[in-house]
Length: 564
Image 1 (cartoon, one colour):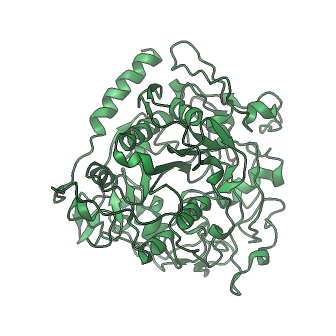
Image 2: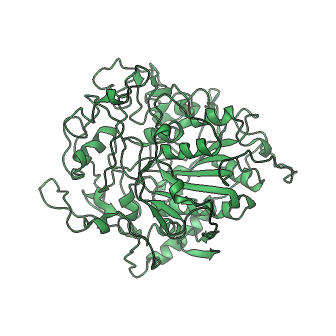
Image 3: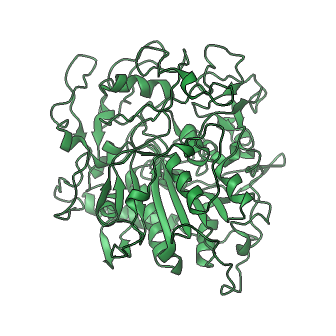
């Protein structure tokens, strides 16, 4: 079967599984005209929607942007003539003269991955191993055997199709076509980074709190064994009694029934996080908001606890078998479940559409992804919405892929653009971590750490000196950053068109915009919201002659309708 027909079949299969439904017990609002007034904002933007995807470095998706290979049978991409220069592998000359060597000392250049190999393996992207790959800014140890602090082997996974140097691979506009088209018609950054190094949980916590500090280990795992902080909390490997610190690994949220009711997770250590997150500020100011995640709605009960049994099959297979969380819902991707103030432990459901985003229905602002589309259809889009795709569509290598990801992202943006809320909406596409995919650009190290068993940016145990950002007498070790560079795209009637922003931003830049737009104040406790770069350089509130609406084909990512 050729690639074109393959993608068509995939689209039909995905379309049958991506049916947005109103869950049992959720009643539609019969009076859609009676909508609450939008709270005052400092910009014309009244709604922020953050599509928070998984595990992509900037060069992995934009290494040759805006130049695609356009092989026969693949979705073609042709850039606008005035596309600005991007800091990527092509412009830096690193496609053919790379300084990464394999285990035998052979030079390994980055290589293109075609759409027929969209499903790839999952690289090592732990807190210390990512730092090791950076090699103090030389960016040349992605294929080098790790030091004693790291795990056996290299950062790169061994892919059955791509081989042992998979981390050097990248996609172009023939596979990630939609994202390249969004960049053409709206604005993106080529200088946006993770707030710190590490995998999914640190990235998700930085998104909502600007910090990973405050993690508290629960003494036992759900199955009753002693918990182990090693690799989860900074300093945990050196001192097994360490029970509080920065969350540097994928510890599971203790305040979530579905950790205890998922068999593969019952032996995992869990944590809570002390402190304040953006949800607390939104609640204090009466602003509607929600985190909407695929598979969050429970499918049953076990011992009085919620069971998260939703699962779907994408190109990588059934997400109930391709990753440890056994289905669409992945607890450690849901950052608000770590905080007692914003957790919905039992996955309680909204009683009716009019209460989605409010504080009046016992959900504590934590929802299933279907609830977002219910609210959107009812004309009740919350002021702030964080969206997490079901696992098979979140883009994470190993159990998802860029084609399934594209289907979710495009359908979501198309749906928003076709409502009257679009004219006052800002959509942000961002990522939680890099997955260990090679990227040539190191960001500034503005948050230092010297945890002897975790940091490895230069010599082992070193990412600067942690006391450089001592807060309230407590050294917040384990927050080395900025971390790896990631894609960052803004889509809005107020977005600059075909624009690339080179100013430094990070995951915490998103909550800084939300805080500034609704005058919420800052989170404190060393949160990066106080120092994160602003995303306003990608927006223009004075000149409205920008892309107004761009409807894409969710299967191919190509333009269906453009109303510039």
